[in-house]
Image (cartoon, rainbow over all chains, first blue to last red):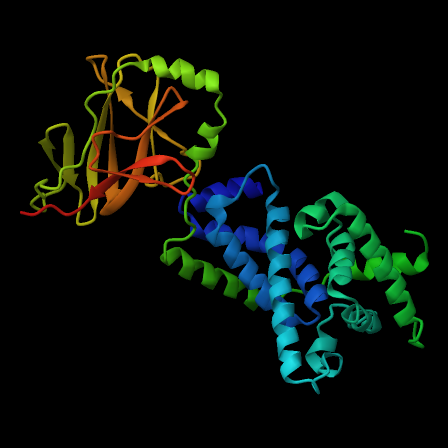
Length: 177
Length: 193
């Protein structure tokens, strides 16, 4: 059943049909959110908020847009909110280094194979991290990324290039890479 | 991608992160709570559709002719006695109590030259039902529809030939919506015995 057909069922009153959308898109959302916000705890909060907001606003969903793209846009906004809150928390507790908090390191999603990449991603400016994650974790085109982020395509290409350059510089300092 | 480093990064970013089933379950718990609060809110769809119609279409529809007797929900409808649906005809309106909060409301609209009449309202429960069509009465002049509505105020308007937006001029109150359109307000309430 297509996403659109499921949405019609939900709008007709079949609330449980929404679980199929959750099943279908949760892993993809997790891949994006964990890598943007940098830890699983905050990522799960962003994902749950995103699905809830999507459900509440389902009546306003425009069918000419893919549900996956619409959901991603909501998710990215939620990730930004989480990150803004984290920055406020860090301002209150300046001694707390998120790179040395266990959950932040363990939850990068690359902990098994390449933990240093997770740490390096956390050091990127948010807009660069967002761009490289959407480009490769979600395989979006630059046109799709522009719709999700609100940034221009040329700016996004530049962010991805700079993200790679920055990652390369950071990871060259890590002996295991 | 230009080199091996970028390929490795891309591959790592694409790798799955693992999903906790409990987290998915939490999403659905929140969704059920939201549903109990009336979400998802239905978008009042017809506006954007009608806004797309051309000036020519509006001009054509202007020839529909006199729209005289329209609907109104009269507040003094008699409630039923608990034995199921009953209806009370009050002027141009039929109000029947289905149960405490859901009532039958019949809307009528005189438009003999119209080819199609529909009602658009915030009571339409599905986004796919942008507007509910009225049926032409045997007399050829009048169009009507019977709706089951919850107690409360409802915004509505008639749409003639899919182009002409016509608030009910006989309604007691008209309101302007956020989209600039004028709506009739329909008050549905439990009748006094």
